[in-house]
Length: 549
Image (cartoon, rainbow, N blue to C red; front, side, top):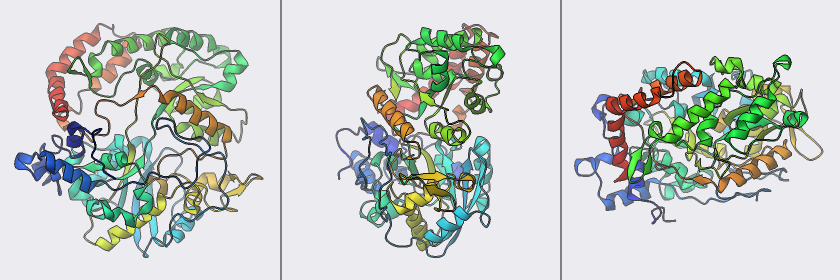
């Protein structure tokens, strides 16, 4: 399979190889750790070298499903399954481990599971792995601080470390090779055939796992659309309220919901919703041949104005107005608020939490719309949202053992391995109902969490077969939205902004709060944008322009 074709521009190749970003301040971290960016004259590769490096670095990909989905993918949307295959098949022929003992650091946005020795799930999986992985699970809400603390002292880096893309620390791209294992020679070209489940992953996921032109990350592939606006369909129907279809009706619906006597409010903080509705990109976009930052866009101002109206109407929960967003899901799930924005993964997590005590709970994603009610513009999610990294290791056999374990974890839906990772042990963590669908018990809900899955993951599918109506609703929702999805300008490019720009956006986060809460006038935004340009914004624009050449 030729991974370099007319659809891949030289601009994107530069991004894959870290040119521009990888060349900044390497001396501070003692070098790039095997950067391909240094192999050409002045650190810039020729066109032939670019092609050779990318073709050598990206694994081959089969992109195939072992089991055909009940709801196929549409334009890249997530496929879905509502039934369990019978029988399950083996995803890996041999025991992957060789008796190694390894430490793993991983985040959790839920109650941390019991530790090794007190967790039957860990015991069962480790037995199948033929190795012992000891997880050190940290609070996902403060995980960025934990990552930076650990990386500041390399001797404390675990054997395997999970880092979500949003927790990648400043200057990571410069020193990644000093801490983590370069996997390129193990995975590039024909070498990937030793890991058939990893070979099935989309090439875009592998491209995004490259830093300085080398493969360092193991990918947890992302979805076409990563965020949604959720509403309580069950309570909307009780109240006789229809979902909104434009910005004005959205505001009307939120106001109609309010009943302070019943402790019911319209929504949580909808700033992310406003940005989706007004099609605000995450970084620069190209307009009339120029790079324009979201802060400079008229739509950004309009999104703030809409959010301000929501708050002025009294629809937003007072705690959300005060910035207390931590309990937002609790408020939404208990019916104190009826609309919130969240990642699409939060949909089934809410069902798992709430359905045992409230079987009527029905969380639904809104079909999105532009402010005037027209078709929305939605930006494709990054190919990978979570990476795992292996600690730098001179023992090549240990690296291969860990990659075999990663390959085992990347077994697809329909395999015994996927079943064990997702549900645990039958009779201990779950029982099958009359349709063969696993139903988790209390021990399963306590012990079976996303730990091993964060190490490596097959291509994303929706296989929450215990919630068939959710699988249908979510896959059909994403399929409908898929026709409105566009690639952001720098899609698939692993760009890490230099640390000098790290605090540029913070004043705008604060300013959005101040304007929407009535403490400042919208005119303050224009002044802030001018200050942003002169204090580094224009330099940041020049930095991104390097990836346009």
